[in-house]
Length: 232
Image (cartoon, rainbow, N blue to C red):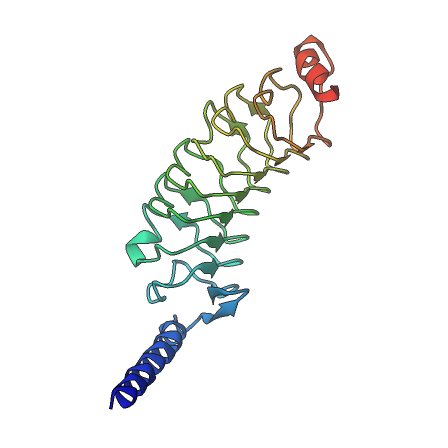
């Protein structure tokens, strides 16, 4: 009898697990395609002319692909208000995003990768990524950002990669990256930089790759301190 009861419990658990596995894929926006990719619960919503984040995605989704849409505006807590608190990776490339609320990504505590490249973002509030403490990879390239202000990025202890190439950047404050100590890769190619503060990167002891070519550098005394650090 005991063996029989154990078998029943085991069967119930197996069925329950199977149902749960199916449920998250069925609870998917009609326009998106939900499936497992590289061991992650992923929602593929690329190139669907979406003007807003789908509201009926499973809260279990870990990877959200929204490339090539027409979102234009991302509002406060855009993802957490939809219950998407388990997101680890968000891809928003080429989605015509013009406005990004400073708390768009608030409470996404396990977000590790964010792609906002090739949009129309002109301004980034210094608190835009505040609270995204696990963020490791940030793609912002090909946005007309133009200026990086003081303390542009909040404290992000796990951030290792930032790509800001082709952003029309002409000015970087000496404290723009002061809260990011362990960065390993920074791409500033193809911008409009003529000079840089001499100590802007000196605190980055783990910086392995710094790409700054294809900028109209003005080789004068203002650039000397940075140049000396760069060639060391």
